[in-house]
Image 1: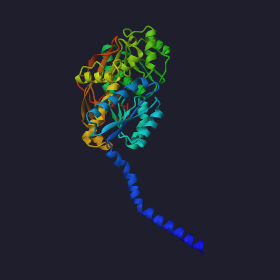
Image 2 (image 1 turned 90 degrees about the horizontal axis):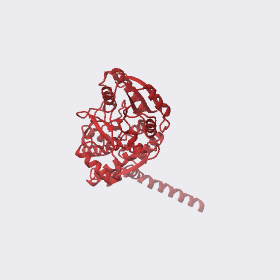
Image 3 (image 1 turned 90 degrees about the vertical axis):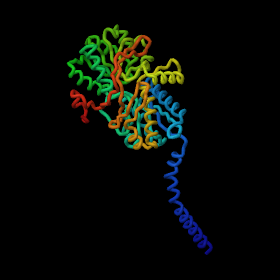
Image 4 (image 1 turned 45 degrees about the vertical axis):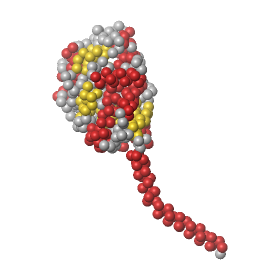
Length: 416
């Protein structure tokens, strides 16, 4: 009997406890679902992601872009931050590996809950993270020129579209260098797509492609390709190599007795940072196509170069992707201030038409495709390792990522 009464008392206790728990469950669930968001809204900081290769073959190019983004964040924070809050960067290393980029993008968006990400360099890394940003409705600010034929609602493309770098470079070469071109690039999406554009454009101009070669990322033996270039006797070489491969190529090019006077190259992924790593003596006289150089003559650039060197050292240089990374942070901050929130959809709407007095000159966001209006500049490497501008467009060019304005480009993309 005693045991029976004890059992009844035990069961009654369980029932009462269950009722009490169920009574508070709705408020507990509400607190769990809304507490984290409320805490973030009340926070004095806004967390953003920075995702670049800080190791591997692309580190020589991407590390400095990270530095420029951090400089912009520091400057904005010193001026009151965004929406009255300080920007807090969470930095991840893509390690020059596409799978790692995808993994780190997922971490930043799903675990760290950052409101936006500044990052990537190669098109393959961008394409690796694109599905992540679209799935999670994240927002990536991509700072590097690229091959075009893409427009994602979750990416702002701050570097040049093909009509703002590749196309004008070929037009310049056709008028000033000659009709025969040899194509060399790293074996991934940007060089192959860029060269498809070049071949279509060259055909329309009556030019001839006398050679086309690709090598894996990080490749270092260019002796055979250099000999092919010598044998083909092009008027110029169009170079889309990326990362450390440029070091090997240009050293072996010069060692083979080829100077810029003999067969000049035009590069679209070699800027001041890469020249510093390769050595000016190997690149003197060769050409580049970008939107910005450290020598670009604007008041904003004078200030930018001064501040960058003050923070990172007098021997450091600026270049186009570095400047674009810096611009990206300011453009995002302006869009957030205009929107009054960091909400991705609201920021995208607010970004349309926003301008920024950048070191390269005024830039503007095209709301239709989330690319940037930019000037185009052709430059020549001098003996000190800097790039002297030899030609520029009169005004900023409207971005045309699918080259819809060019009859010769019809068929290059399904978006035509």
